[in-house]
Amino acid sequence: MNFEDKTLKEILELLGNGATSSAELVGYLLKRINTYNPKLHSFISINPRAAEEAKEADAKRKKGMKLPLLGVPVGIKDNFLTKGLRTTSASLVLDDYIPQYDATVVKRLRDAGAVIIGKTNLDAWGHGSSGEHTDYGVTRNPYAYDRVTGGSSSGSGAAVAAGFCYMGTGSDTGGSNRQPGSYCNVIGLKPTYGRTSRYGVIAMASSTDSIGMLTKTVWDTAFILSVIAGFDPLDGSSSRQPVPDYAHLLEKKEHFKIGVPKEFFEGLDSGVEKATRDAIRMLQAKGHTIVEISLPRVRYAYPTYALTTFPEISSNLARFDGVRYGGERSLFGDEAKRRIMIGTHAAASGYRGKYYDHAMKIRTMLTQDFIEALTSVDVLVGPVFPFPPFHHAEREIDPVQMYLSDVLTVPANLTGHPAISVPIPFVDGLPNGLQIIARHFDEVTMLRLAHEVEEEYQMYKIRPKLTP
Amino acid sequence: MKSAKAGSIDVSHIAKLAKIPLKKGEEEKFSGQLSRVMEYFGQIETLDTKSVESRGQMTLEENRLRDDEVTPDRMLTQKEALGQAKRTHKGFFVVPAVLNKP
Image 1 (cartoon, each protein chain N blue to C red):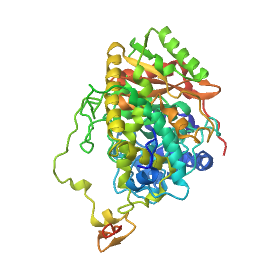
Image 2 (image 1 turned 180 degrees about the vertical axis):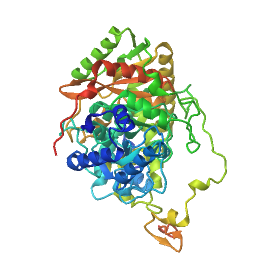
Image 3 (image 1 turned 30 degrees about the vertical axis):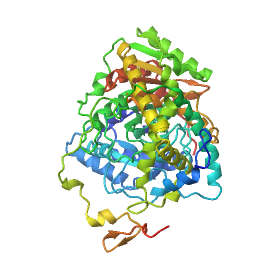
């Protein structure tokens, strides 16, 4: 059986009706990973117990146990702590780090019966939007090996697209799930801030870190979101809002008012602009109302993002002192060093008022702008990246060029809103996503609209051709 | 401060504050890169924020503290807690000396 092209929904059916077993499935995928991962670099580590855990899952099923993800192979981004399984955050600082506990999201996935097949690659510490800032081999785009995957959840995006697993977790601090979603032709979800627990995910910027995932389809994402979301006493910003049955709510059709911020279309690649506008016209033809709106302060979003989150990064990475775990600070890569130093500078005495404090106020203004816009419309839509997947090393030379990749994704992190990337037709033969942003805790509306986009284009049926 | 030029960063001072050991040539490399980045970030200075309040929570939820109780299932044994350290001594972490240093 061709397992690599199956969605999570299809795999749950095959496991449920006995057409396959978790052991068979995991064996098949491990072989596939062994063949193709050495070139793709989507996994940093393979779980040595994966085959055994699959057998355990099959035994549970035989006993009549019913769990939502029983026996399903998943990938875990390597900045999520996994008890007993090496967690590097893609940095040599943590090259030999074996966590003593599981992140809450990992625990919930394990409790739901999922089998962790391996730990996925990333831009170290989550710092990057290309997948190139890793100490464990640059992840290649399964659809075009010489191009980037998007990042920082580069490995999860590539692994799901390549058919190595049915979900890869991701942390989205400035676009890290939506970006590889867009470039790898998969779904990338950033839930509302506080919707999912941050506990045990190595902190990048605690006030914007949002924990989500990448999957082949919207249903797959909706189904897993119901498993991992919900209050966690171990995360101080975790929300007590009830968790709906997202997958069940997808089918209901509704006509929405869709806001199109004109600032999201400034300076875009012409192919990306055309594909995005075509998708918006398609939604209009389906009966949704399109409203052009303006969010003038969005152009300040990136500097605001950097000047508020880099100080958080420098504080969070201060804990890596090489005393209790991990290695020395000299092992940090260039991008971590840059962010730590900019963050230290922006919050240092004499500069804090001008940078950090000032940017925090702009963040409040921007949030107010988004909340207001989302009272007159149900969702906002736009592109994810301003340009199609670029070649490796193309934008790395100049940090400013690199940071410009993130201008369209950081706003939702600053404002806390949920956002998703859903695949729309390719640009220049390369994957491309549509970004949908919704009201706080209104993932349902966002997922429904994403589902409609997916029903129309069915991009998940276009599969990459891998070479060993 | 060595220089008061807009956007410039005193990399050697900042690296010391942030405990980032710099290799040969890195001070120069990062000075150029970070100054360009700060120049780009400086565009926010033109925005007027005088009447704006700074807020840390955007979804209007509140931070909560957990109850101050021991949660036994989260406790590590001494062996587990020390298990990842490169240097330990009789059940303690060994830390680099910070006193009596210039």
